[in-house]
Image 1 (tube, one colour):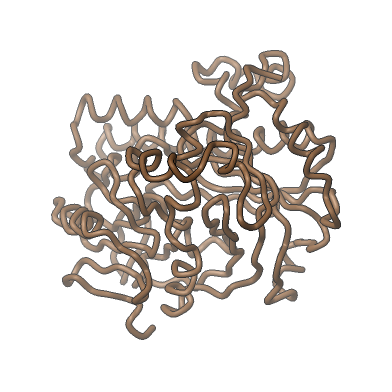
Image 2 (image 1 turned 90 degrees about the vertical axis):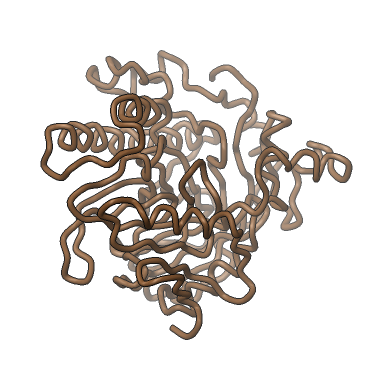
Length: 379
């Protein structure tokens, strides 16, 4: 594993190469989190960056108690990969962009009634289902650019000649409401294993995971219907959650905050919307808390992006990338916040995990068209 696993103390480490940019504030947040009661081990991934009090791109292992605040407000945030029936040979980008631009940010009530159970329709957050949301969430058509292990990708069902759809979203307002209730009652304190409060949170947490997974399925279905095609889900992985786990022979709680699981089969790790994504096969390890990076990781704070970029790029210019892909985003502030320049190099993130012996690269995927917000109301 060379020098890619970098210990900061007995309980804290991070994964990085010499070329991986890790902000000092993120390291500070790692150390602060490690000092929480009953925290045993903290590991920062190569996409590590500062969050709201706790770092993003990290995994945390505790005993006797777990911390909902470490999971955050987007419980179940994750990524799903669908294989479309659209052939990759010269896709009609003008037609795809025009069609997807007409898809509203939210599904209309009639569509939801057709696709949701009565139980889900009674959820106070049902109308957010099928919506991507803001921040770094997206739906992106991609094409396979390089295959490194076709034997494994064949088993997964990946067909290089067909466009892929990557969906990144979570539990929307439901996760936010669950965290808010917890913080109002317990501030940022942990919950003792087996206590009624812990069981109550875990039940809500499980519901949010299911909600997030359903949301990604519905996002994919809406977009596939919009471009008049169908798709098959090849994988779907959550990267914001807490679960019971055993690390180095000790039973406890594994929290992932912007960290892909390394013990659930292949995962996809996207770059910025103007860079490649990588399909990888993880090697699970206690050293990495059975976790991986979940993307490129932010390099700039959102509040500074427009100031850094607005004199060099217009929103129209940012809707086209150096790889020839297109970005649909009518939110002028968001398109600056999510510009490729605001993110780390995905290559350094991937190289760090390869160097640490944590992944095998299966395929590289190139963005074709990214949907963030259309500015529309509904279909």
